[in-house]
Length: 360
Ligand SMILES: [Zn+2]
Image 1 (cartoon, rainbow, N blue to C red):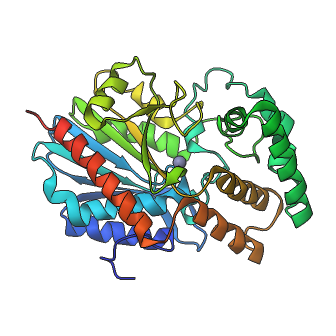
Image 2 (image 1 turned 90 degrees about the vertical axis):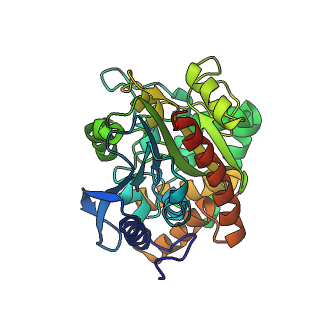
């Protein structure tokens, strides 16, 4: 593909090579950290980091793509867009760090989860303690990820789940399904049984990513929740927290996941919250930017199909291609109008972050 072409690519590898080319063209310092596994096409996998700006910057903006693998198609395209079109607007004293494909295995396999079927954003719990309980998940686990995915099974289990939603309310269903669970390794929104590779990578490299900065904004790019093309800023903090209030001052409308304002349910183990605890001496204004695609039921159906594919079927079978197309369509829209809307929102969010990070 044309390296300069904007928008979504078709594969992780295309996204990666376009990112690396744009980063080098922009004069960024590029570091690549190999992932121990290979991707779907046996391609090497890595977390790639591009850094632009002074080493001794007192403020840093860290933009992250692919926390949820498949969502990296959009995140990578936005990082490329920044390198190609926006980097000249960086204030001189702010360093920008682009982390490409935090979960490269999921990106390559067109999955939200990683090589362990783990949702990286449920993995940042305190592993010295018993993982948070989500007892109601067990009651619907067999409906969410049944043993087969034939038409009858899909229909029956979906109707039962909708019946469950009618009983407990849709918000409660979303909380049980997506809040995180630590008991069903082949289920959805599984948080794992210990820190996964990308988690360990972040812990090992956080200090060098932040460098000497005393103020940091981590912008974590997501897709799949909310109205089409809309970009919701989601804070992991409560509304009383100074970080939340600072975010509101920077960007206006910020939604607290914890206080029930967001399209996302409250959840356990999200990485921004986990990492922020380690940045005790740093003023952190970190946020997830979540772009809407299709409705939440369509997204859930894609995630269920993906979980069944990887737990009971052959991911390399023709059925696998169908499921991957379904997952990709749930998390990214190839309509250029969608990317235009997403990119415009991203521009505004990044501009406000850089203005507020720059020393005045
Ligand atoms: Zn996500």
